[in-house]
Amino acid sequence: MERTFIMVKPDGVQRNLVGEIVSRFEKKGLKLVYAEMTQVTEELASEHYAEHKDKPFFKDLVGFITSNPSFAMVWEGENAIAIGRKMMGATNPKDSEPGTIRGDYGLTVGKNVIHGSDSQESAEREIALFAGGKPFVDYEKDEDKWIY
Ligand code: ABT
Ligand code: MG
Image: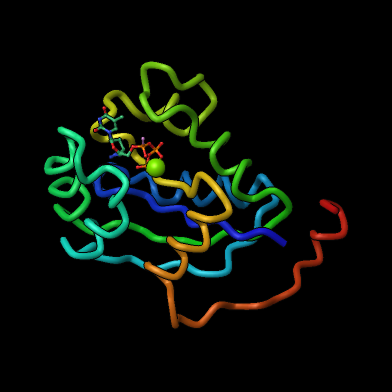
């Protein structure tokens, strides 16, 4: 089973979108195995967004993600990474389709509500970074037999 790291960013937490976002992932059939309200530190943000460190928006990005608490989660299921990205929609809300999370709730690329791993490699890296050493809950759901 694949696992993906999903995080409601500070704008999503402030705008009361945590419940709505959790609900969408639950209804899709993915399984929540880890969740935590977390204040992202500057150190963690710089590590998480290391691929963007030379971009002009890096400073604002780190400033934004550390400005207020985020809601970090790990979701499990078949093709969880690709499905998570589809549910989020395109990075820039001007390009994300209605029906996606960013398409429905985002307006600007700088505050685009949600983060999700974009590959197997980044999922492993981000899960280790945000949830490394944390207890993951391993459990069965009766619904699973109607999903798989
Ligand atoms: P993240 O889930 O935040 O990683 O977004 P995503 O993978 O969809 O998009 P990338 B390219 O990784 O963007 C990272 C963050 O940088 C912001 N950004 C991006 C800008 O502010 N301006 C830009 O021109 C671009 C390309 C958007 C993403 N996060 N936020 N918040
Ligand atoms: Mg990214």
